[in-house]
Image (cartoon, rainbow, N blue to C red; front, side, top):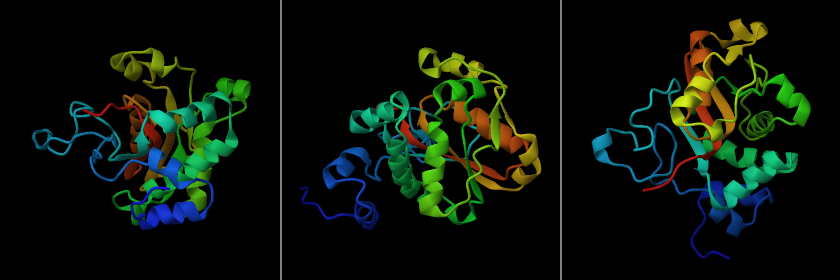
Amino acid sequence: NSSHPLPPVDRKILERENWCRDCLDQIRAPLKQRCPVCGGIVQLHAALKGRCHLCQFSDFRFSQAICINNYGGLLQALVIKMKGQRCEITALQLGELLAYEVERLDKIDDVDLLTCVPTHWRKRFSKGFQASGLLSEAVTKITGIPSVPKMLKANRPTQKQGMLSDFKRFENVKNAFSVTPFYRKKVIGKHIVLIDDVMTSGATTSQCAKVLRAAGAARVDVAVVARGAKSR
């Protein structure tokens, strides 16, 4: 029922009939005030030289991150539903929204493939669900960019990142991921987009990007459903 004119991308999304306009207005952030590095929807300050207050001191190993919106409101509720209830339909719908954000990435025409943050096999076996894999599948469906969900593997179980301080989050995922042997040669020289559900400190996505770069990837970008960030 909103009266403002719809951007072309929003019209395209609504034509797929997975979202109503009111929900779309609540979920998707406007293009203004997006940090060009970490993707947070924040107030940018010229003094921070192209970064925001969330990432000004971060040494990310990826080139750029984007998201649908900050973690909160309706988007937060949908992420909780997706992960808590293992809702595949919600994962695929959020993945479709994420696909339109991926298409806004710098150098999008040079992207070779998608992959996703892996879940350790014990956790995947117990839950029977991997949100990042479903999100990646949905992004591929919209963008046509090939997805290689098993390119990365989790070497060991890690603690829940949400329970740790930022420093401990980076320590928690140190050496936790590696490139699956079968795909090592396929990484070399590639521009890869890494998919995940939520990024807060960026520890997990940065560690995965580090591993991909060490294996020879030319560039790694990150696309997440939600950015754990607070505007100010």
